[in-house]
Amino acid sequence: MLKTIAFTDITLREEAHRIDNALSFKEKIEIAKQLDKLQVDAIEFAPLQDEKADTLLIKTVAALVRQSAVALPIALTQESIAASWEAIRHAAHPRLVVSVPTSPIQMAYTCQKKAPAVLDMLSQLVAQAKAVCPEVEFAAEDASRSELPFLAAAISAAIEAGASVITVCDTAGVFLPEECRAFVQTLYAQVPALSKVTLYVQCANTLGMAAACAIEAIQAGAAGVKASASQGCFAILSDMANVIRHRGDSLGLCCRLKFTEMQRIAGQIAWITQTRRAESTPFENGANNAVPQISFDKHDTLEAVIKGIRQLGYDLSEEDNIKVYEAFCLVAQKKSIGAKELDAIIASTALQVPPTYKLNSYVINSGNVISASANIQMEKNGQPVSGICVGDGPIDAAFLAIEQIAGRHYELDDFQIQAVTEGREAMGSALVRLRSGGKLYSGNGISTDIIGASIKAYLNALNKIVYEEEGNE
Image (tube, rainbow, N blue to C red; front, side, top):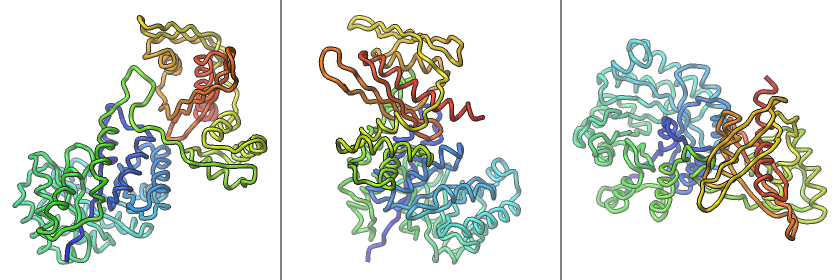
């Protein structure tokens, strides 16, 4: 009988630590969706940092992911357990992760505690996490450099407190494959209770042997591996899958991963994580914006339309949901409503606010022998402000000039242009979706000049953000 190996993907956890060109909200969602299609056993995130934005992201993923567990590490405080549980509680398979260093140097540096105090803290955190979440994992950071008696005591305490998943981390990547096997064998001998839970290994790829170490650990009894779908510092998911695909029968191993999808999905995730937004453009370069396949008509109820609003990524108030539905009913009397039409209704109806920024004038210079530039004159609360920028095209330059005025980059989630009338004097409609703090704000603009329509749409969305984030302080 073949042994089924579990895989936890840590791509999103590790990408959260990057300072240079972090992933956008929709890129994170796309990676999670692709991993779920691949049927990884769990998708692990980084601990909550920006609680509002991170909670919204994880709640969105939890609603989309059906095959994989959603694993979220807690901070080493009791207060973080409630916040972390609130973020993942609606996932089909939620998992809280208590990640604690177990080597002397890391305990002193990270926890500022001695070994007995760390052991008490670990037991309390696992027990409290288990009280709210059905599945709790204890991850022993830097386990390969820990003193074995303490590591064994920590694992025993975690299992006794309710942990059903244990991960031992070779954080430094110092193990050779045969040493990793011996390490796992010793742990099973020292901690008999390990045979009753799922043991994962997380091997750093410092020596280029992470996959080999993981296979040796599995041969010694481990049942799971933490790996990354993108190139990084740990075992690569596609490498592990290739070993099992080609040598699984001889090793007595199998897994849930879809081998036929692996190359395509791994390539797509690598493209997302390696394609970064240039500093000179407001446009994101990663995941394409997939439009949900939704369709409504005049017979659809408020509840159905609200569901469609949420599918588009919006988190509207009850009052704005009703306003959107009333506008929807007027349009739906004449035609069916798809995703783009509903998006436009939301942009023109929801969160209508007094404008903080007003457009006075704009001058755009563009051509095939010069770089596009934008000079935008506006008012902010009645005070004149201006921005001048060069960009990759007139709209790119205009959006950069607005960012310069606002003093902040917002994630441009989507940008659409379409004609609303015909003929030489046709009116153009632009829709801009900006994301701030994880929340989506949309704006629309109409003009015979498509650049003007785009600027108006951006300002419409920007004013909504400023009103919510600054006007209500």
